[in-house]
Image 1 (cartoon, helix red, strand yellow):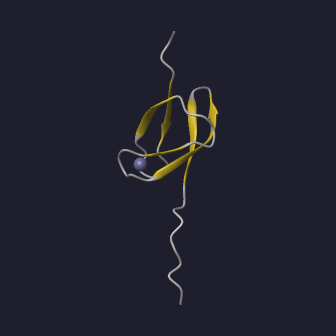
Image 2 (cartoon, protein in one colour; image 1 turned 135 degrees about the horizontal axis):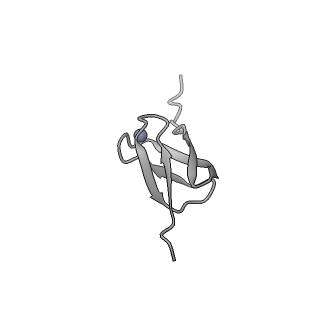
Length: 61
Ligand SMILES: [Zn+2]
């Protein structure tokens, strides 16, 4: 059994990431910039990642 890892590049800090097998829609944090990234899709073992907008509370004005 081969080790299932996927690679991708952080869209924010462009760090090369190698992560255990994830599925589409999963989120994880970039170890470099701590941004939350979501797996939009997987193509040939390469992750397509997008930044997740953190839902900040609207403090009301
Ligand atoms: Zn990053």
